[in-house]
Image (cartoon, rainbow, N blue to C red):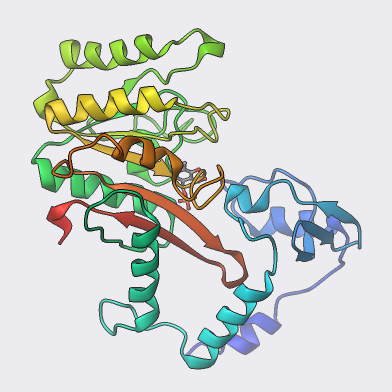
Length: 307
Ligand SMILES: Cc1ncc(COP(=O)(O)O)c(C=O)c1O
């Protein structure tokens, strides 16, 4: 049996300057995990971070846009501590517990729309996106997915195929698999109007795949990695209508924009739901992060086939 305690103790622990820590990082961490800032956090509180040399910073990155409560929020610390005093991990599918169900109930109540909702929790945004696509495929019996230029959906193989940006995410890795078709994201700044974007979908229907081959249209209602571009409510409604017309599942990836970051919990889906038939499948995903517990929770309200 491996003696973990002895193994960990065997690691040499040299200096504590940022430069020394960067050197250790370079020696120990695979280079696929990029390094944006050459500093190492020592502790943090709300929006302030201190590095290992005692310097103070304002944290504008917030765990890359998911640390909505700030660092070490007392309520979250309390909840995490209570949980760790009770039990750590069971695998909900094997041994259920009330907290999971209660969180799903509370999230369901926050999601707009006058129809029954259900939630599944995943450990990462990529996993949530992949599962939404899986449900769309099972529900429609189709395999195609339309995603958008500059969209970002994660770093797993399937989500890289959905991500509309080669560098730095999939450069050097070859063509990503999957029946993914790329539509233009509306962005006036780069000369793409809403009409252009809808026409690019129509072109896919004409040139690449029939609507009956498309399981889902997936987009970030507000693009994050792509440059903080916003799809207007009218564009979201036009997509909703297009999806209703062709029996396509509309998936809103709100991993970066959900959980109150735009002022209300999930504003973009509200716009879509307001004029959507309740019979249409409307998978929705969002996320938030309990930074203190290092556990990412993603929510997802699926359509009927996930019952
Ligand atoms: C819009 C969006 N979707 C999906 C993901 C992937 O989430 P994760 O890194 O937790 O897999 C991200 C991550 O930043 C994201 O911004």
